Image 1 (cartoon, helix red, strand yellow):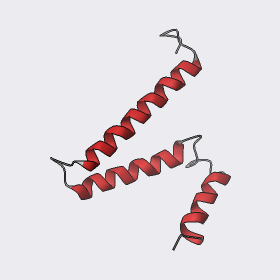
Image 2 (cartoon, one colour):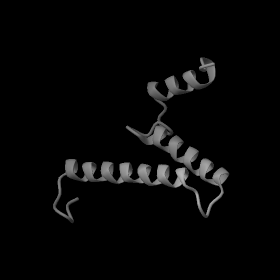
Image 3 (cartoon, rainbow, N blue to C red):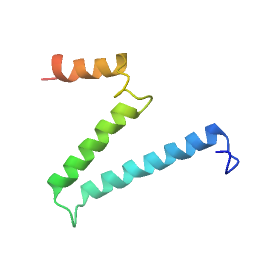
Length: 81
């Protein structure tokens, strides 16, 4: 940040834009697969979704907090049927 003379908020905002653009690209490629088989795209998209959940606000993978415990409860203990 210091190297480019931008504030932490500006850097965070730019990262958010890049993440949103990445999601748009992933979704577009999954809608019209050409060179890669759909099962491979599904696996990559699922891994990306999991990483998004783990690291969205804070590192929930290393430091399991209440939010991650709730996700696990909703998925495995009280699933939607």
